[in-house]
Amino acid sequence: MTIKLYSHPTSPAGRAVFMLTEILNLKYELVEVNVMAGDNRKPEYLEKNPNHTIPMIEDDGFILIDSHAILTYLVKKYGAKQAQLYPKDLQSRSIVHQRLFFDASAVTDILISLFIEIAIKKAPGPNEEQLEKLNDVYNILDKYLSKTKYVAGDHLTIADISYLSNISTLANMSPIDAKYKKLTAWFNSLQNEEWYKKGNLPGLTILKSFLEQNKA
Ligand SMILES: N[C@@H](CCC(=O)N[C@@H](CS)C(=O)NCC(=O)O)C(=O)O
Image (tube, rainbow, N blue to C red; front, side):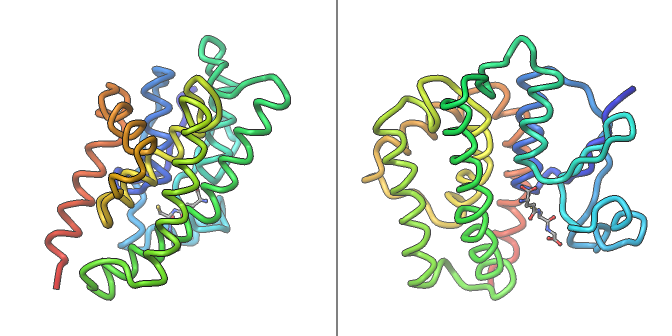
């Protein structure tokens, strides 16, 4: 039975799942949910997902929401050959969890706040408080990456995939300062991956042109 993925190409959280499906070579049926048009607030969607968010998956009747939870589930269920993406060793896995929780909290918060500032309030860029929070995020990731090659260890994990969708979106709204050398190098290198080009770039490009057109 084909997995149904409820998402939208422009959604950062959704793009993390798109990238993982490229890495796992996992087939799915995309059900487009347009948040801007209110599809996520329709009763039939809320029945499945009270959080009214995308992405969401439906796998043979099993419903799961939140990109971070979905990434762990898909690797466990469909990624036997790529199990290192979600390491089994307790301490390595715990580091992946910590990175994911930080992404789901502070990184997502600044992303949403910046999106509202630029797309809805039509500000040219982040305000002072947002810039401080954003630089704190960039600095923290830079510190992670000065210890290990990837954000949660010396090989790629789902934490990198999760950050990549959010960081690529944030960088579009407020470029990463070159002083964050490790973060810049990590970002530049992962942008060359086929799974990034197929899973992240198309939706990011649509979002970028939306933000351009939407400028005051
Ligand atoms: N922590 C969630 C965040 C998902 C999220 O906020 N998605 C946005 C689109 S990128 C959304 O659905 N917003 C609509 C809403 O919250 O009502 C995840 O990682 O899936």
